[in-house]
Length: 264
Image (cartoon, rainbow, N blue to C red; front, top):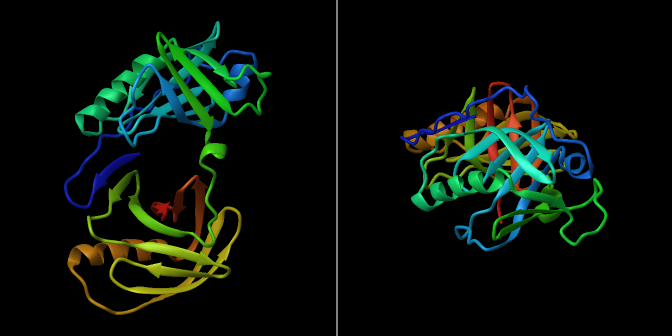
């Protein structure tokens, strides 16, 4: 997905590669145990990660997606002789501070050919093993299953702050200083729309949120803030689909949507 801000920040879209040509995970407990799971870095020996950054690895359908604080990279993978072999790794082209971009390059080089094992304590390798260890040279990176290290936040009772406005295949960031947020309780949503506040009724299932009419105050703000408010309001209407992963909530209204994060 492409990312651009309401002001000037523009990010290039990821190159999507076909998953054909022998890139699937090989048989055995490691390959089987990786499929459909996401792991987050929990410790590293022999190298220092940029403070505040996290290595994230996701394995889905024979493809590996990875990030380390700046760009996202993805490609097909296989397990060969206990090593992770990557095929044609592609990356987004977002500009970040130099040390994070250097870390992207380091991660790509580290992953390809690294020895890989589930459950670093040497217990039986099963689909329920939650520790992933990668070793290359003198560097050992330990990761934990995302559902254990960073579980999904509940939709109800969490204040969800809008981070991005989805329009087609692009995500616009929120201008600095503008705050929009949603708070769900049983049958209701309270809305901070950027300028005005209010709320309305909702019906929630495991995958959908059906928004009733949303009532807001009528205060006027700057055009930049009102643009955010209009974009938020356009999503909060009718039946939408939603997904929560860890502290991130995505609401999809079909061509428009919101990306939100759980407030501390």
